[in-house]
Length: 327
View (cartoon, rainbow, N blue to C red):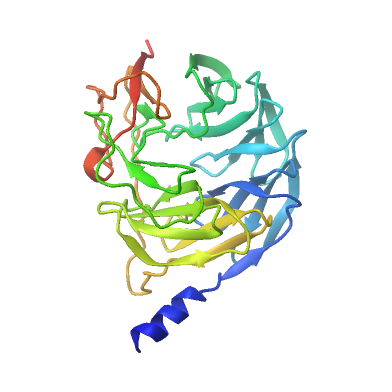
């Protein structure tokens, strides 16, 4: 097949399935364990679960009083945490879709939620610049509250549970993706370019070798996480894309955005003969929690001396941090 013919085929790639139901744009996506179900939250004030194999919504929607931006699912697949405009976190039962708990959390709107690998801690970041860390087993009792100094839009725990919101990469409205050096606080190499609009969401593949990016230019693009080289051709949407997530196996990506539709795609490099990659994460207790904040904070990047990651991301690159004792 000629290069011209191959390019034409890639550019017209279609999703395996597209599911509708949200009445406003989708902001976050999370796969449940096993990869057969996907959770979304949207500006229509709902959280929904989708059956990927059946191509439709599962059960009833879970409803908030305001629009939603924060979403996380527990590693055991039993609970969903969601939050948004009303500053509260709701905890839902995955099977019954019923609300289990509600935690008054922030004075301002919640932008992101993250869970530790052992499901013991829940962290949320908000418009008011606060990061709140809660005990899951203690009904959301606050363990720490930290002032990050500005709106916190993204958080994530490291695989061993010792660090929060560690960053291999950062995305920007200047249409670029950057990788950062923790020792110098400077970006590594040139910015990755290709998107024609701001980058809204990033997802790292389970094996750490690929990065998916969603953009306001209506595309999802793929990158080699070590070199920054683009991979294949972008996946084309009809509207801006606000969220993207790799499946647990790495075979699929889910993407969604302005049209309120959830699309499932097979990654363009997938070969049915290759083995599915499942990353096993091990939690190692520590007395220190290293916080990684958004760029432009005054803190100097450094590694935690107590960190013994069970799975080290490519080049072990981290983003701006400071330590908080959990004594």
